[in-house]
Image 1 (cartoon, rainbow, N blue to C red):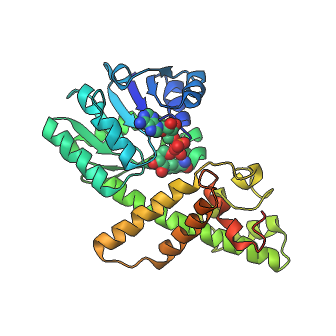
Image 2 (cartoon, helix red, strand yellow):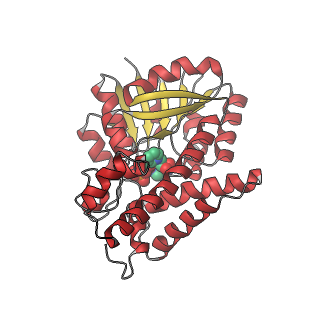
Length: 298
Ligand code: NAD
């Protein structure tokens, strides 16, 4: 059995740590939000009042935080991850961050003689709850076996993408595809409605046809079609609009960095910006469907 330090107990970190506890491991969690801490404590996570306490004697240190700036801050804080890490610990960042932040963390770990792996995930909160997340790993080959052992209680599939930052590069490309697929589901669902189709029947047809996608299967943005959809719950977030905008922005930045034009991703970012401008950044990203309805009522 292993001891995990876990920083960031939100929508993803909460259920991921619950699965580690269920598998018999010790998890010491840290989060700035008291509600997230209370919810995690109910699943058996031991709540720490400092990063130092969470990390003392840990085998693995996971971060599951909103953005690269949060992860870097947690690592670089005076009493943060760098200050408390030892050569025995494996440091893993599962947040979706920019490539530059991930590269900085890899370089700093190497300079300090520490072991770091970028280990972002795909599968949403349902994948986190069911322990079926796909993990994509980037880092030194000699770290991968240990990383996979530590990750396996939370995962359905672990794929080594390559060297440092390869995991996050794969994640950025994947999520760009996801949000373009979400736009397709939003537009398809609304056109089907205008053409008089029963929403559930159309969803069933798309599910066995070429309109199928993960977004269509899991986030279909119409109420009373599939149980996992935020559309059934007033679009309360399973994946927040502002985080979706962040992810598409990471892809657009990578496009600029590599000289690639990404017009569909640019359109998705405009949709998310509209929602953020309306003060809806903390709602679920499937609320993108609102932009298609003339009166904005969904
Ligand atoms: P979230 O906002 O629900 O959770 C993030 C948690 O980090 C919050 O509880 C917040 O209080 C905490 N936090 C922020 N700054 C902190 C700090 N300095 N110290 C300690 N805690 C801090 O976000 P989430 O949905 O769990 O997503 C986390 C990451 O995983 C993001 O990068 C996101 O893009 C990625 N991701 C999310 C999903 C999803 O479906 N929600 C899926 C795959 C990947």
